[in-house]
Length: 317
Length: 255
Image (cartoon, rainbow over all chains, first blue to last red; front, side):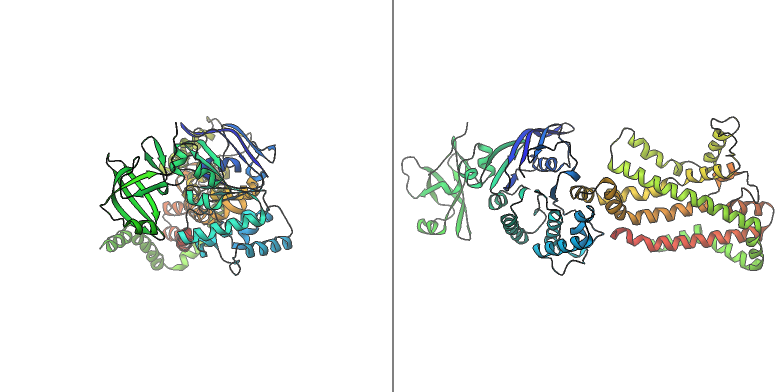
């Protein structure tokens, strides 16, 4: 099911959360809404779900105007950051809730719950209560619950935000696989650019109630439309009038025409790469990223003076 | 040290008088108390108290849940005022409540319902009791609703539940302990109500006399063992209520 957001504006008091936002999400895609906090990404997701009402604009689901539909009638699955588990129900009751309120036969509900428990790898946990589960298990339960009524759209609001790094990585990979199997149109909100780049096939970058750019991760990184996207998606250095990524700087030990003299202020080894903080003669700081082999070949060390030149840079107006 | 102060305070203020009451009943002989308790007018007084309570508690339970949901989940003009008014009976002396009802439904008052007798009859006594016991369910439900939040309700909506289904399957179960606790407190308050009911009832033995009024009447007629006997029953009810509340309290946190 495709999603079209057309000229949506939403205010909370005097705060403008969304300012004339339009976005298209293609059927079967896996889209990330990426932005810093307060950028309006969660509000947009909640408006798509019908949990908030826009002050202006329309939400079109599968070609039909859904703006005035209640969440109950939108047929979307929604996953909350803090799970929103029904605390007084067991895992099975939680997962079967959507079917129960639809008054489906008991046998059908039971079969579907079995299937979903298998899918989210919670076998043996069916009769536990949410309080007896770990954060990762609770979120998987919430996912299964959202999928039970076979929604045409799955919406996730910072679904992995409250989990620790390892569980987050597992669930990301799992969401990706799930999407490959079901091809349910999926939109998730995140403030973590790495998460967006890793999971999504299309990223909507938001800032200050506006959409800055919509593109596949690769395009977003290589061809950012503006300064905000350049610096929010991946790291970026200001280099005079232009912007350059930390790994798009070449380091030499001798000056060479267009190179800039810099002092290595700090040098850290992170796995296969080396990161350095550089200070230019005018006091401007730069981040540098290079391979371990390259750093070893140049015998780089903190306190050393070296020369850098961008291999690829971008200028925005 | 703090524990000692708290215990001594409670002993002097609460336990002392109650112990005294029990001791006097014992000294006068349980037989006399039993005679007073089983007198037809006393039994009628207890029945009346229970009737009034049985009407007031459900009314205030429903009201408490509705007003709690309105205050916590909705925005409407005058919300602050409603929230403050819920507490009014806590601030107002029951005697004043009784007097206002007396004036409102009395001969020169604004409200008359044909030949239906309101004052000096069950309706006024129920109204008085409902008035004084309004806040208790609402005051339990409001903080619990705030604490639970509305995410579970939102989740239920996105899963296809109607407003009504969400209320029965999600909201109500998540505040059930607060409601039960509120009901227990309201019941205790209704059983013990004296001041407001005293003003509007006329306190006619065998007709409009509740258990607490019965105690007062016995006492005024210098029938001390009668007063003690009825007090004993009210005291025992209080202890039962206390035990029930203590059993319920820890469950609040886990609900």
